[in-house]
Image 1: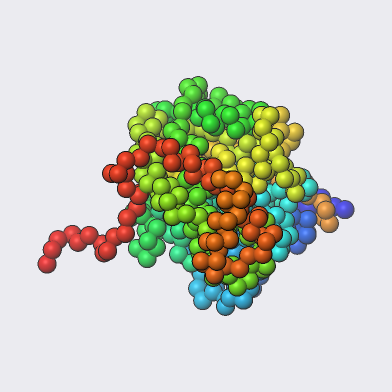
Image 2: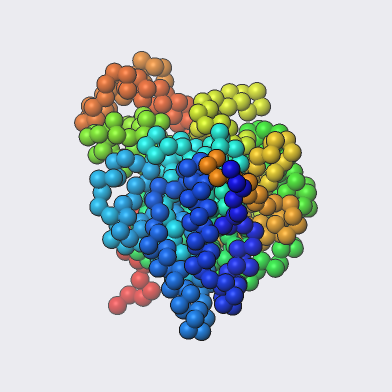
Length: 473
Length: 68
């Protein structure tokens, strides 16, 4: 077996700049990615489809544009892939399911794929996920589990597990995913890469297969914080046709990144977020806090209730969305989630209504907290990646069902709609595995979360580490 | 919610929604619903009053900048 060179590695910003100067080609970069995917994906199982003809056409178009001397768009030549709930023209949008194989192919790209294309990025393929995004582990029974590149016996997290694993494995430097209750932040944490869940309503969701209309977010993963910010800026687009897209202007973050964390009031979430964190997760937060000069412990309001309300709304909307297929062909659903979908469809209206009413009060409490703080830190997951198939998890002496427990620390934050960047940390106590730290800002302040992310990266405190995958491993 | 109540609720509400469930699946669904009931109970104890409306309400049309 031979050790494989990385197709994506620290330095993708340099590669983008080299392509822009005409010193490197998009086609070369793409072919390196495709070789890496060919050699490693049997072990990782990140991809469910590869869009080779399209990728080569997009890369060649970038190189042709450069040859004419036209200035290139900001992501020209950047290879990326998307969770398979994003529409890709000419491909069936599986959303991790067997059922959707019966759907017709998408007529057009999702809005965010259109944005990436307009920015010059090169789409390589579609990525594995939990069926219909209802899970935190990507142990997909139809397409197989996605494996953690740092230890292939462990989960990659979910539901955007393929999106996390492909960047961690160095197959592509960027991917897109979705996050309803933690589905970007959990895989970013367990795979040791950067992720961004923007404010609810920031990015258009049009052209993606929904899970929970009132909580669904989309966002990017990247191998570096700087690249994450650059991609996020390219994705911004006020979209009047998505009723969940509240943004009415683009707030570019790239010009603000040099400010680092100067003048920011930074706190550490205690209480609930400490109680459900194991020692390695606490160590990750402590290291980030030390680098950012944060010492004060802050209490997030009603985190337990927020998780309960998010849980109920998720189950109700998800169950209702899939009720027609649950009636006709429940046996074709993912065995790990079908019973939860059905239970959700049957919930009493009172539970759901109360959860929505609670959310209003909760929002006011969260906004009040951000009167005193600019940035709050918390672990992204209670633990590092557990082995595939783990049913129960011990968190500080209490046993929890493993799959839902992976979202314990993310659910309350997304329910408030706050933007969160995940910084990949490598605490000694995690035995060589990563755990992410959530950098949480007030709604619409992605700039603050990303400034902190770039500061941690420049301080050398948070980083990606690509594993030395072996051919045929 | 005890198991018996949960199971009876699942069977009745599934019938109302034309959702066929065999006995084993009904029992599994009832177990999930019982766990959710514990969460719903916590929310029932949260202090909400009649003026606490849901966070987002239906909007019939974009509010006009000015009336014609």
